[in-house]
Length: 333
Image (cartoon, rainbow, N blue to C red; front, side):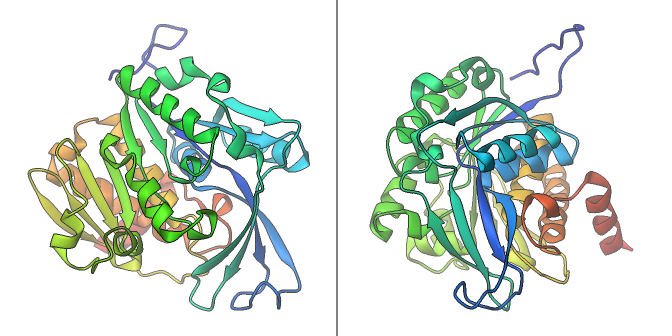
């Protein structure tokens, strides 16, 4: 799909629309303690699809977020964060009857996380098909989404309608399932829900842990990973934390090593990676057909993910293009 024209007749930058949840993460101010032991929490904006949208604008790209907040202090705070970061928020809606979602996130000693969510139901779950900003969705080059918006109605129907509108308008679809088991009724429901739209996507990014969960097999085993492949998929990426990532296309496959950094908090690292990769794909829709260029883009995405782990919270830790290029350069020196 070609970029749309700007008001002055020039080609506008390609647009990535991110659909789903944005919420507030409350992160303990001391790492390595349980939620009960924590004496204080830092308030950090989060939600994978929103993180991806901000990751793109921080790297100099163009993005929009589609989702719903409570018509409350936290909801308006989140909308302002999107605006401040240059994300198009014309697809954001406010619900006067439901609260903005909250999550308490425990940082364990290794920087990994445990979640406790407050959503029953939260505003993001109540977005309806009639509230979709369809011109925005139809005008994107890439439509990106997760699986949390599939858990309950009416958001699931809105998600399906948005996906169809984007696809029918010629956009490429990007899926990062972003498994959050505490939000699903059961592990089996999560597996089923996540796989229910699996074959719609052009690009899929999964973590090694998610491969293990979805296949119930060894994520190191290539045959296990390739059980997630299907005819029509253009690019499958498996992120392996600090080890980097693996990539699979119908013509080639390989690994790109990661970056060693001092990890403080892994929140948002996958979203920084995805935002960077989607920006590269939006600029060059055929990137997945050129292995050399794809490897370059993935190395840059690995750098973005690594930088994001060096401070607490997702959005504040998302890198700029300059900081990511510095890290890439330091590896080659």
